[in-house]
Figure 1: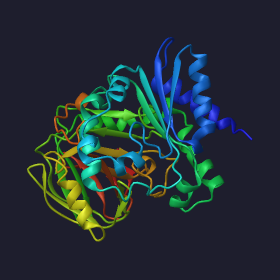
Figure 2: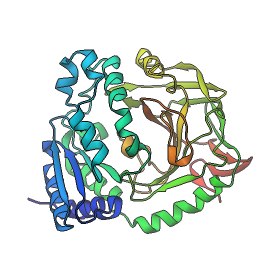
Figure 3: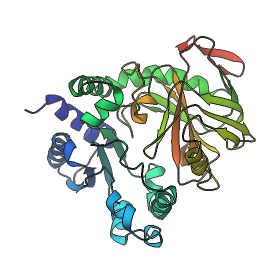
Length: 361
């Protein structure tokens, strides 16, 4: 039985997020569990007089199936397939639907293999990173995602659609008020338990995500000045998940914009390996402020968790060129901190603008 919300979500992705035009070649990627949404996306693209180029895999990877990544020689992983790079470099838009059957499917892939693939495809993905081509990523409610969130599949589906199908014009207007204050500030300070970190977005500006490259939207974000981060931050409220691994109790200390000390209560070795992925992986590529009122709880799902109203997230690794970022890295890892706890706050040039997760401006 079809869910009418799939059609609504497809129209949001095709029209609002990507803005498909007649004649466009649109890569639509996903896996079999996401078929109801994928088919709606293909229909809407067709109705817009554009090409829907469906790329179906079994594990939500867009260009490199994990079965191949596990077995191919390491040297081969480091060389991208020319057909794939041509598609990335010449498509007019990209819509990616994640519908995992196992959210930890990549957990057994060694870090060096992941790094090789990321490095191989990074040059062709530059136009994606720079938003020179419209793209959007979203998820489809699968039992695996529901299980991670501690919900029934039906409950998670209701949650997902509520978070995604919002009045994004109104959300944009609300978030822009806060973003404007960050744009006018020289220094951002985040204070909480075991946390006191300062950084600068000066001269770079922020971007409001209200129906853009991520669905659900519900954040605004900027690219910190590369050498500005100073202090400590403890991500002790929620586990962080990256590359199929889960790490609890991550603590980072920054000097001159670089992580100089790092630890984790679990999977610390993987944390340190990730920080050593390349020269840029110990610097910040993003500061994001979660603002989606439809997301109020941790889901073990970064796409949603980074939008929790009353949280912030710092991304290690690749910066955001259109916001002035110059840091380059194979990784871009968003780690979420809860600021809804007593005694936490965000300051802009010494003025408290958010206290215990509540805006006071």
